[in-house]
Amino acid sequence: MAALGLLLPAPASALFSAKELERVDTEPFLDYEYFSDLQAFSYPMEWDLAWRASTMSYRASGASLDCCDLLWSQELLTRFQLADTLAFSVRLAQQEDKERRDLHYLLEFEKKLPWGLTAWVFGEPTYDKKDADAGLGLGCALSKGLQLSYRRTAADFPFNRKAGDPQRYSRQPFTDEFRVDADFARGRLSLQVELDQPLRREFWNESRSYSYRRTTGRASYQGPVLGVTGRLGYTYEYQHEGDYLSPDPGTRSVDYRRRTHTLLAAVLADLGARDSLEAGHNLILRDARNDNPHDPDAGIMYRRWEAEPYARWRHRASDLVTTELAAFLSLGEYRKRYPAHLIPSVFDPIIQAKLGTGLDFTFGPRGRVGLYGAFDLDGAATHPWDGGSIRAMFVF
Image (tube, rainbow, N blue to C red; front, side):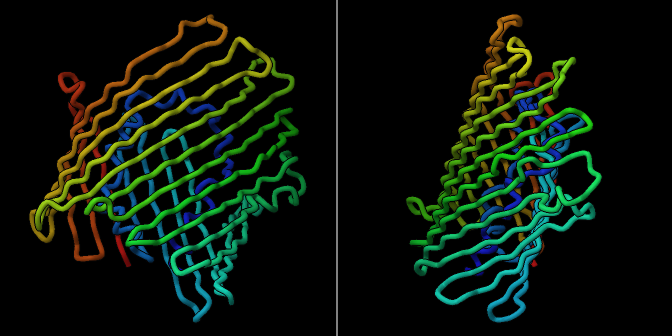
């Protein structure tokens, strides 16, 4: 169960953050290249396998999305065995993109109990005490390769106890996480559900009320597939946010909801002693709706789907340098409809093709630094350069 404690994503992965208040409807910020950019700048499977096999490591990735926005993510995992049955870990997770701007860190104690049980106590202290999070978890090893776990986090749990603040939760935020992990035949199957329970935050000085809920489900398999390393994954996310003002003379109230389905299938195969090929396909189905409770004619409905096949060829030129040549394709459709029909609807095809190149510098078994560039094939005549990225990973 100690290994399970590190493999579990931190409860903060779907935990409510006050930054959600800053931007409710994110759809207008997701340009036609956005998901193609995320695919082109994602970690190669070779890097991801090394990350998941480690127990103390750090990785970070920065990439240019456009003239003004930087995709930035970083993760830190550390674990210290304090006694035979007691461990302490620190985790950090930051994700900055056009949809989320989250920074969470987690301090956690893990205690092994009799009968195959494991208990966790964790939290995220902050300078502003009202924003601190705390939680408890319990895991159970049903057999050698089957583990169950449950965690509950109280987000901003001291918030209402701080007098004099013009904001209050009329419905306190909690996150529940359920997870099943099964190991068999050198593979791992994981099932996970995260529930950000409905919350309501009142702004008395603004006559404003904000509501939020999120449900995330994940299923993944990683292991041998027909003699190569394979990965299958499915993610479902539902998010509902409301920002209501009463009275609302500027009709700024928002009721926004989004559903996203993401499916991934990929394989990694060795092509001799120095070469490997990663090939896969990512499918995104996304629909969203933004309504104004005070103005039925102001609604917008979004629908978007993208099919994203890709391939990466990696060549180990020396013990220090690995080169990468990759191709990324995105085909889909973007729709935007106005129920009142006061504005013409949008039905646009999505066609994106990118060529990726990169150099990895490997410093023994513990360090990697990669420099990458993306070239826009579908618009190569006018704008061939499509952004660069840098990533690093260190195993302690």
